[in-house]
Each structure stands twice: as structure tokens, then as C-alpha cells.
Length: 430
Image (cartoon, rainbow, N blue to C red):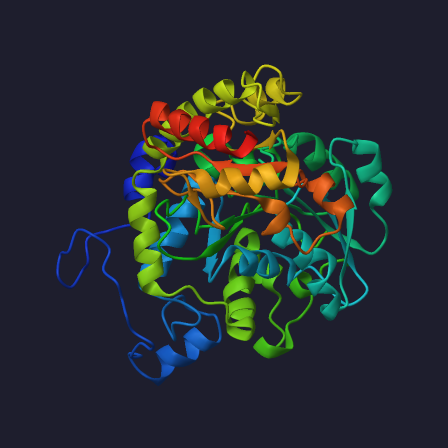
């Protein structure tokens, strides 16, 4: 497609990045299940390895099926390029890898997926990195957390598990003032509901496992580069601005301009970290993205109906869905994600921990799984599963208290979902 800016989202989600296969004319993107690719000659091989020519070398780095997915996601997010990888957690490390060094820190939101909290509070310490957790609704606290060793700011557009809406523009302004990249996890919103780059984000990460694929079949991740950050404006990002010894002193920012971060993600990140997305997984995600807007519309429609019903139920203490007028984030939805507040939220069950367990065990349509963004409606008791490793204080801060369950509302008949919740709540609170 020659001019993606002239096409609408529904067209781009089907066509962006894809072309009929030149060898066979196949209209759907083939699964290029190949490890390596034959070079035309020795000169061609040398040019590829020197980053003087773009092409395929080895599928740990680049693969034709994955390349189509990368271009499609970058187009939908409004970025200049993207790098797909093996999972959403891999995408987070891939995004931080070029920015961080031992002794450096990242300022992150307190409202994050439990696994991300663990990754940032525990695992990255092994690299000599650290994270400062701050309530992103307190912009003064965000500013105060930034110091000379800070190299990035990280948050979720629609936070998992509570569905809280982040004021991306406000945090982007703080990042700009500090000369730092803002990384936004857009997994829960998807580019259909929210495009972080338009709100000032530098990088966007996804767990493509979730809504992008939409059917619970494969894991994957993606890092999207806005192309808007000046990596040479300070000496904070030597991986981008200084000579790279592995490529004979090549400077990524100088050589690749707006695509510097994308090329670094492939040439260094995938080469050395090896967090590769497999081509069959990319194929499934490409098929899922073709119906993204249609699914998200139904997800949101169902979520509003279910959340409104739950809020009126005496067996429920509260509902965190930002699409409810009672939510403190309701007005923010209009500017951050005007097409809807997503389909992920939590609600508190009267009776606490034990009632939540009974509720989960009594549901028939909802599946009890550690996933979200499926066409099927899903539920999980975060305090005993995804957020189990966190302290009680961290669970509360993340919106995963013991009396709370998280639901990911699917695309089934909303009335059936309500009936299922009704009978399960009766058993849980009797």
C-alpha cells in the first residue's frame, strides 16, 4: 500500500504490510517456515551483515511472515517501524535494552500487570537496573522520581487489571521536559481504542498474545518505534548515539535516523537476546488483526452492559470499569480512548477472598485462565494467581486486592454473560 495515511483503520488492519506472494500469487501472507535464506552472492551477504542492505539472513533476526506483521502493527500504531518478539514480557525487555545500563533506573506506574511489577521490581535488578514505582495520577511525584540516572518512563494506557486510564499526554510532557523516552504498554487498549504515539509516547509495546491475536492461540510481543525521539540530544543513550563496536563503529542514530531504534532492536536486540517470534505465531496474529476493530467494538459494548449490571448488584462492593459514569476516569476516557474504555476491569465481591474463589469455580461461560483479550470471556482471581508474588501493599496498589476478581469481557451474548455471573454470585455469596 503506497499511502497508508489515506486509508482508514478497518482497511489498514486487513491490508497494511501485505502483498500477494511474488512467487505464487498467494493472496494471504504465507508462513515462511525457514531458518535461513540463500544469499545472491558473497557481496550480497556482506552487505546484509554490514547493515548496508535490508533483507533476510536468519529467522532469529528477520522473517518474511514476521516482517508483514511488524509493518502492519507499526502502521496501525502510527509508528515508523516495529520489532516483533516472543512475548509481551520480551517486548518490555527489548524496549529497555538499548536505553539502560547498570546503575540506571526507569520510572514506572504503580498500576501495572502483576508480572510486569515482578519483572521491574525483581528481575531487572540482575541487569543492574532498577525501577521507581509512582502513582502516575500524581504528576508531581512522577517529576520528583526522575533523577540523573533515569533513562525511561513506563506505563500502561489502560492498566491491567483495573482498567484504569492513564493520562498519556500529561506523562509525555514530563518525559519531554526531562529528555526521556516514554514507553506505553498498549496491550489492553490496542491501537483501535488508543494510539499512544499521537499522545506523545516514544515507544509502544504490546503483548500481541492478547487482543491483537484475539483467540488465545499464540504468544507474542511487539515494540513500535515512533521515530520522533532525538537520541543524540544528550549523552544518555550511547547505544543509539555512539559507535557500535559490533558493526565497525556504526552509529545507529546517525545511520538510520528515525528508524534507529527499530534497526537496533533487530541488529542488536534480536541478534543477542534471541527473543524471536516464530512465523506461525505471526501468521495467527495477522489473521486476528484483520478483525480487530470489529472485535473491539463488541468487547466494549459487552463490557459496558456487564459493568453497569454489576454496579447495581448488592452482592458487589464496587466495579472499576472506566466506562462507568461513576468512575473517576470516566472523563479521561473521552480524550484518551474515545471509542471506549476497553473490556478489562475488576469488581469486588462481598465475602472477600473465599467468595471470589467460589465465584470463579461456579461460572460456566467464563473461563478461569491467566489470559485476557480473548474472544471468550475470562475471569481470574488476581491475588491468588497473577499477582500472588506481590506484597499485600503492591496488590492493593495494582488493584488486585484479595476481594477482587478481574474479568476480560468477550464477544458472546452479553445477556448470557450476565446470567452466568448472576448464578455464580448467588453461589459465592449465599
